[in-house]
Image (tube, rainbow over all chains, first blue to last red; front, top):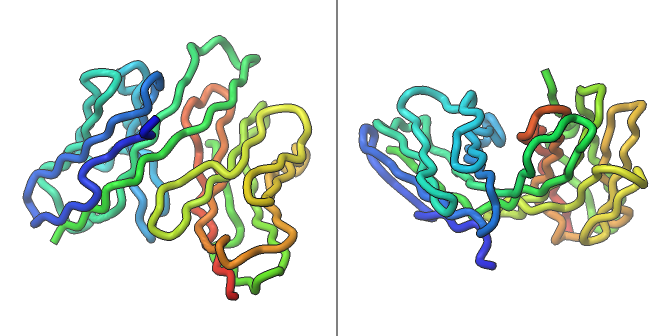
Length: 122
Length: 113
């Protein structure tokens, strides 16, 4: 398996431009997570999808950020317009989450991370 | 709210020294616990995990962690570190109804040869 694939690996853009980050999860996984990593704030969960549906987007910083998952094998994170404070490494991770069947059933799952996209906004 | 606390932000050791990184979480129910490692310039990868059974979990590269429920802790240990262990280490928790992982801020480990 190729693992989680992200593109581009590096992106340098000017303030105000639109940025689109792409992620291909591992085949068979039904959940996808977008994270942002900075020195100041560490690893932050932005949004996650389960079966292509956004479940929790409470970590999305503001309306400039949007994420989509049109099918099980592709997701995008878009920033429009971009700002210098958006500079960070953006990671995508995927896993398989079984259908929720109550707290008694706690299934361990591992998130598999992609290589990340290093975004620099000047 | 559920949270994860990693007490050591930066740790510097010499090779062959013993390592213990602290991780505490706040949640009273059943938890799954994870340690991830991020080597310089690379993505996060799983080091070890606990979900049930023996509270002493062994992971890759000689790492282990002990789940102490009464202390809400899941500390990471290695008896003798190597220069190649230089990395950032993250503790994460999956608890209760929460299907996402709650992450600590990470501990940066530098091992001097």
